[in-house]
Image 1 (cartoon, rainbow, N blue to C red):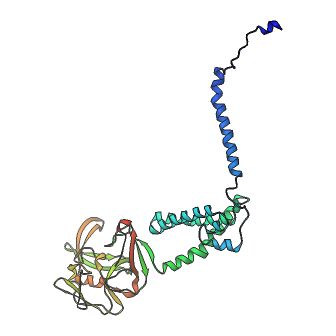
Image 2: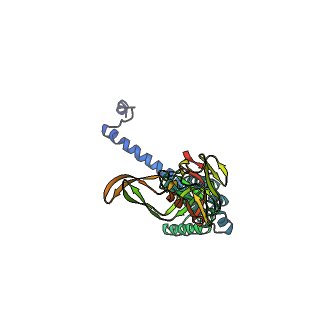
Image 3: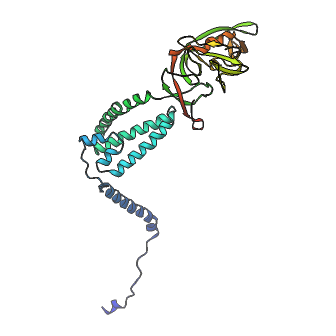
Length: 334
């Protein structure tokens, strides 16, 4: 026993070997991963303010689903409802401001999807299977479309309809989005959308005959005179029934073409500039004539401008109200 008491004792703890130090970081990562897993389990088990996960199929909750997020707040999930409502407003307002463009259509689709998600989450918080969720979501989307969005769009389309322009028709340009009010009740001076019939006529092009073809379809022009009104000119000033229009609604080079024109019954007089480029005196033609490249100036009979300017009053689709895209040119149309 005495001999043992004389042995030297190492009071320093054992140190890790080089091999142990090599595997020590991996051991620490394993501990960190275990702690993260425990934290995620705690998050999943946390109530997050939910009162319960039972379905809310009562009539009051269903009626509150008309407004995105309202049903969620009614079911006791106010924060969730606020998030749904704010997201819906952001996507919906931007989508309406850009309506008529591809981005606007995407934003409105996102707003509709947010509305669907808010209703599904409010009425049935949890599903037993993914198939049940898909089926209920589809039924909800159909119900919202038929009961809310289709009637709302039908009513709204009676007030204003967006139209994307794919061809420059001054003062509008390709890519613009305009809104028109569907009506046939128009007045002189307004820009209208009308359905133009196809028009064919002949002309002269450098000693040869040429044919002018005005394709039918929707076009935009300003109404110059209504049925029974008379268009005249006096030293470059345009007059409607003897009243000076300043600034004139027609280019001054129409003075010799549309002089003392009284609009017949059932017709209106429009600005034909968008139908005959060049102001009615000639039309630059580019393309091919009998398969050969050409760049000719086609001279037309002055009476053609008068024939094109008179269109049936029942061909008017609506009155142009405003331009909303691009935002740099957004304005009301008078």
